[in-house]
Image (cartoon, rainbow over all chains, first blue to last red):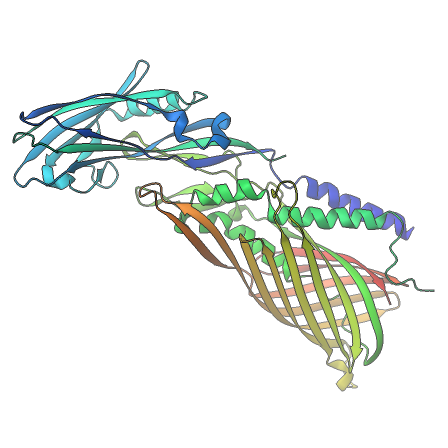
Amino acid sequence: MKRTVLLMFFAALFVAGCDLFYDEFTLALNLEPVKHTYPLNPGGTSYTLPPTFFDLGSYVDSDYAGDITGGGIYNIGVMLSPAHTGRTINGNAAIAYGSYSATISYTGNWNDFSTERTILSDPTLVSIDDPAEFEAMMREIFRQNPLPTITLQGNGTSSQAISAGDSLTITLYGQAAASITLN
Amino acid sequence: MNRPFLLPRGVGLIVLALLLFAFAATALAQSDFETAIGQYSEEQVQGYVQPFADLFSANMNSGHYYYADIPRAGLTLRLEIVPMGALVADDQKEYDLPLPWGGTAKAPTMFGDPDGVVINGPGGVTYNATGGIIKASMMPFIVPQIRVGSVLGTEATVRWMSTAPFSNETFPKTTLFGFGIRHSISQWFDVLPLDVAAGYFYNNLTTQDLIDFSSSAFGIQVGKKFGIIGVYGGLQLESSTMKLTYTYTDPISSATQNVGVDLETANSFRFTAGGALSLGFMSIFADVNFSAVTNFSGGVAFGI
């Protein structure tokens, strides 16, 4: 009798314990920032950022490459180098994937961008022109498995001629949602 | 005749399986758990793991006693298997996650929605929060302990277990150590209608470099026996700390840093009420503990 009671007691506990974890859960992974520095052509007041391709799949830890179910870009940064007093800049960069394209605009004094300015910390300096299009594009991008290649390109003008050695850096900060199987 | 430390056939294996499971549950799947918390900054991670610390602490400070009549002298030697369970409250399933753009949003804790949540930010950006891992409405744990007495109405308990890493270190080395010491108060007074004891309890559990948990508690226990049935209760002051150490890579600066988070747990005072059944060499007991976190403990004791 004692033995039966004990076995039932432990069996009940074991059954309860086996059900402790979810079968799957969503893990939000910080991706390595997608960062590119464009040297700006000196001499003129306008510049172009030639198309640059980024394989987003390569920014995901290989352990989770096959498990991505969602994600997005949560911040975008722009930085100019070196400093130039009295110069202003007005430019944009387009992120494109398939038929989607979203434009990021940045405008202000050149030196405002001596340190990175982002859409979250400095929305008056850097902004997304069409948030709905951007959001739809991100949904589509992060629905792909493996994550696809996106294109970044743009152009802009400066109030003074671009100097030799001037550069512009754009950084995309993203996350991927991975579905992790625990059992 | 009593048969101290001889478990009924078959029970030993089940107990061993339970102990391994309990330790594995505590260790979690280290790689996934560590990766999950490693995505969060120190500020963000606290709310995600705080309920785990609260529930774990409620369990660890349980099951230290099931009677108060500590004999003045004579041999007490018992092996006790003590399962515990702490109730997961609804408000432990969500917390206010600090966001990259400032402010907070509701996000799942370790006990929350496993699907996580997508939070919409300014300008079309989104932020993903990790989902919950543990789905149980009661968080279980189990500890083995040995009780030894009595000298001048004083007895001691020791909890210990250590598991080597297994399953390719998915479950890391985990070590539990705890002790308690209790002294009979009622032995010094002839007029008390109840048995009264006082005790101090300490627990420490480490899971490799990831978790370092310590707790200490001081309490007064009362009890009364009616033949083979005993009732007991107690008041207990307790404090626990869970230190979580992990590596975090700042997604903005890409700087990698070792983060150490000290989580103070919710329980500071508890009231315990329970009952026990003495069946010769074996006793069965169960109690409920009321505090910020409500939990249950119970178990079986084999020995004299």
